[in-house]
Image 1 (tube, rainbow, N blue to C red):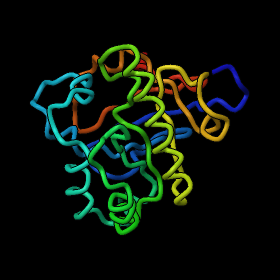
Image 2: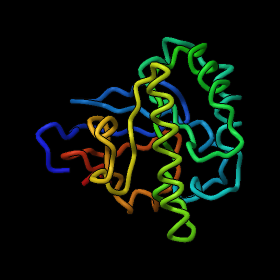
Image 3: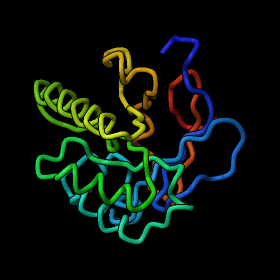
Length: 184
């Protein structure tokens, strides 16, 4: 990213809500649909149309309690053509969640090159919609240099090697100068 405001700390992707303990800034992403993928799957599986991500998120939100979820970002698939954003927003609010992020990010979804550009535009529009609804947004991207000004202040760049990680109930990555990567 190259700016003095780049995020540094820990990025935790979890199937359960809540903030793990850790030093420095911790970004906690609540992604319950990951638990529905086959055991031993790679994170790249989350970008494939093998499950209804937002439906699984909504089902999980029915059981979420405010204290455990309030500081987490809910992982929302922003390129879902069938999602009713107002319904998702209502469930997030009922669960005490006021933060959303685009996960899995469209920039890692496979398809024709023109399709990725369309996905990116739709994803940004959805994030802006959530932001206009009062949600704090975190943008996950392959390249944050192409973001609109309103979203670039709270964005991280996901390293491609992350998508090869094996899915676990809780996955911890490091953030250095706005780039999320594998520890070590």
